[in-house]
Length: 167
Image (cartoon, rainbow, N blue to C red; front, side, top):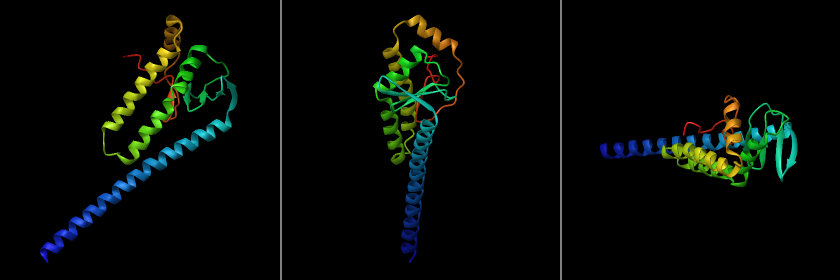
């Protein structure tokens, strides 16, 4: 009977761990879906123009940033260097990379490397968008340094002001 009690205890612990794993996975998945729905609502509520087959949300009081086929800008003006940078994120399909890592995190959340990969991937995305967008290096650097670095952002999006300037 001692052996039966020990195996029952292990079974209970395994079931508890599985339940905890599924709970955390569900929370991550629901949170990601919730963030996506918040962005969709945000996109519907803001003034939109189509530029180069991209939906540009103007005067959003947040950003600049991009997600999927949307670029969102904090005011009514479109700064060419910032627009090209955000357009590069869209053309290079960076949103899909982020969503893929989020999907992996849903199932493999205990793996801390996925969080590091996501952080580094966003930095690589910034370098790629810079390389893609820069026509005049001096103007681009001036634009980067003259704008403020405090901004609201959506965690699924690429925001212009989360920029790896120190690197």
